[in-house]
Image (cartoon, rainbow, N blue to C red):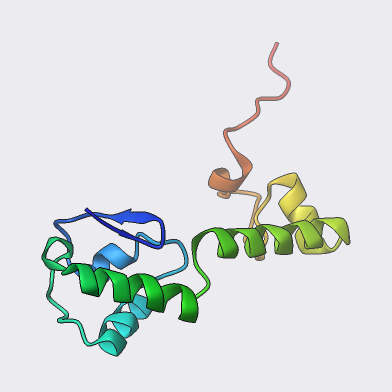
Length: 120
């Protein structure tokens, strides 16, 4: 199992799919990384040489904000919105959808399970 930027990549997956296990790297970014490092697209993680793993470990943190730094930035952005009491911060604080979705119906993922009111 290859360890890249502190994340264990699954060994039986193709490299572009395995790189998406890193927080902050999606499929497009993963394909760009592979293309820039000139690694074969269809290569699996278990077939990577130690040199290729090392180049991944050097390239990714230099060019992308990933894992801990990105999580810290996202949480600080949300904390800033909550602190200044803007509408989006208020929605984050109350655990409601933030981006304009309807809440009369749906929104169960964000609001949590139904709270029954008035049962006797």
